[in-house]
Image (cartoon, rainbow over all chains, first blue to last red):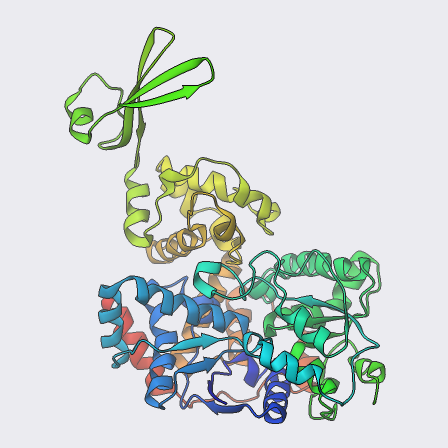
Length: 290
Length: 230
């Protein structure tokens, strides 16, 4: 299987572990990733606050490149990028005039076959779940984990067309197939404060605290994420949150691909577990070797 | 003629055509148009009614720029109960929508709410009237930035400005550049220094920007800006 791959800015900097672990997992599952040539920033949190057209044009510039490279399916692992891509496509699908305008801007005429996918969507497909469940490798059986999807992966459903907006299950199914004890909890789609990290850190601390508290309440030992912003907020701000609320969580925040990697026998160095703020080298100890 | 049988009461609704409403000068209209109207007969009383739509030019302007019709909001407050940042806002999302409807432009564009919306899409997903509040917030931020209104949360407005400049300058995000720019604009030089140092140590921030797609990004930005007429 072959997909175009749009890492986005975060996966080249703060979320390098996500990039590395995703590539490692895909390699072992026989999924080929072709990085979008000369990709540009999708506009992330900023473009839609400055110009409606720019917010659509930047993702489309990248989608045009996907088609030019002869591919129709693109994997977008960052939840914020995924959302911007989906929105852009949704907007031009519903507005032929905007579509023509935008095709002018990005100098490309779009076909109809383009599909924007989150890696979670691909990995949680039945065929992959079966493939993963039948592996005779290590198992995550010792790990009690909650799955945190964040805001943008599933919302709004008429734009993302992915999983359930209020009670998503794909990551739960995926990690369960790898043997992990996946716990039910009430914060799977709550907001962590997103891009306020640099500006209104007080909001990020409050919202991230609620999520960490929710994870602790159900007895989780770790949180699995699918978004570089969520991971960063919950991980890098955890010590500050503990100081502010006078409590101790010490909860490692993994990318779901890192946990998959462990179950697929990828060495923890390759998964960059040492780069986390809260010690993440505990999960490998929990992995049950065959 | 629409007849509603509601238990003991039989209500007869007579739908009015748009022309009827405009011609009838006796109706207490505040705006220029009405979206719906009718006459209710029940228990021997006849009441004429209408729902005034787009009572303010500001509401009209927002609808033109964002496609969001704030008049269909019936203030159920579902957006407020799901909003993770409502606690920090000066006006809750539903209050802000109502202010738009009332044409309180200065209040809306000067509010902290438009800058504190995290664009998490919870309100949009749950709104029973399909009011795209996030899209409305986007348009209101654009209006505020363009009209030069002083932002109630200057650091967030500064973050948007710096991020855009960052995209224009490098084509991709250059986090260190963004942080430096933010520090210059907010003058909070000591904020997160410790965290920043740790991130550098862990290799989470790249030292130099990538210019891989600079030309392409500039081209898109300038072409899109031209379409927006600036």
